[in-house]
Image (cartoon, rainbow, N blue to C red; front, side, top):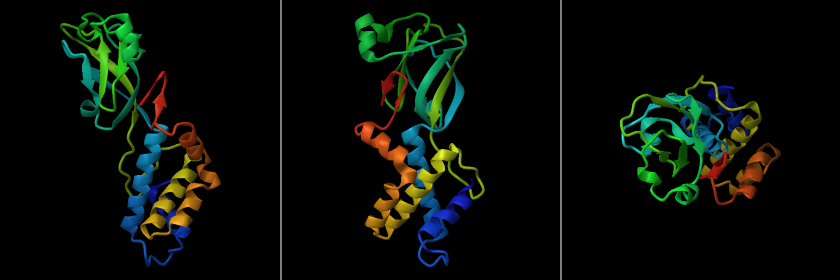
Amino acid sequence: MTRNQLATLVRANLDDAGVTFYSAAAINDSIQDAYARLVAEFGLIEKQTSVSFTSNLTYYDFSSLIPDFLAVTSIFNLNTKMWLDPVSTLFMDQLRWDWEIAVGTPQWFIPINFRLVAVTPHYSSATGTMLVFYKAQAPILGANDIIQIPDEYLGILESMATADGLEQSREFVKAQKYLKSDDTKPLQKRRLANPDRIMGYGNYTY
């Protein structure tokens, strides 16, 4: 489904076929905002890219190295042809107190926040690259761009974008009906199960 096709559905939900209240730009903004939130909350877009190892560096700012970075899921060391193990700071503190300055071949990675990922031990004289697998942010949609999410999430996106439009016109009761519709049950279930976090991948959460 393209953005324009989704916009047609959203406009029909808003009962604005004559384009008398909602501009095309307003509906497109509602779709883009809903798309960004949905992709972030469910981690729907997965990508991979190469990042060069840096000498004596433990903390990598993936948000500056990878433009659409959202969250790391796994890392493969192309030098050793081995996967790094995802662990927590608690695990590393118990393993060795000086893990932040440890020198050697990288074996573990620790997601710190939405920007930083620690890789330890670190190379003192780095060469080569790591292959970073990550959840990506939603791209900006053009009129005929295909929406990059599984088909089963399109109904959620439509409902979220419709609800956003209704909230703009202060139709809060109607907006809630869309947010609590059958289409959004996976979203409701996730938020009830995880009220205090946005996402969790593998053995760690953000």
